[in-house]
Image (cartoon, rainbow, N blue to C red; front, side, top):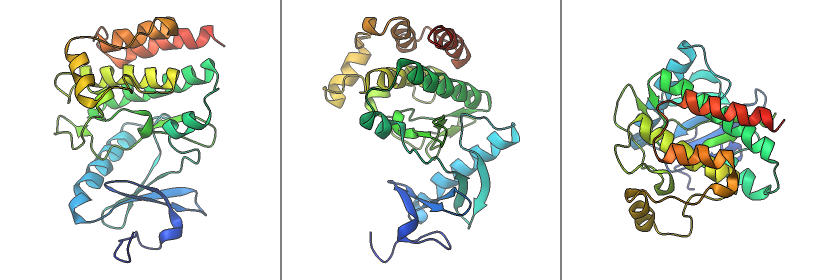
Length: 249
């Protein structure tokens, strides 16, 4: 980072809690909210897209599986709920012994959030554990819509290969395929084909070859159905998962 970094008004280096390709996230300690801002003008469109999506979400009543939106900040920034436990991906790496029931709880929360965003015209585009955050009560929050599609607009993000549907990426099928990979990642602790190159993974998917899931029981069957495109909506996935979640509690 250099002296030329453009911080949101009132924030500085000490306030940064996350730093990515597109921008930074700064914590406003007294309100326990965060401000997400682009690094430079080239990334303004990403934050503008995310702002439009959160406005759509709020207009549609909001959802507990998404970060709460507190409105715009400066010209090209947004203020959001703070999720103090950070990325689910990082949390799982540090807490590999999490119970199956907790993992299923997160999966249900994410799937229900995914179902909601589908209904309001959003395709996330990069549905991975790195884009799921954990709030103070350990609830999963689907996040980072800066590269997402709204009402069929082009995706502005490159889909993570281990979660990439071998077809049209801006589609419900692609979303549900990625959900299968995300569920697999939550249950096993690693992404599908994490030991293969991007090209090898893509080749496997194109041939309809997927990692074994039998050892995961019924949730493994749900993962396979996501990968095989046997589901038409996230609502049905959520229904099957809720049955499992109930049976483990």
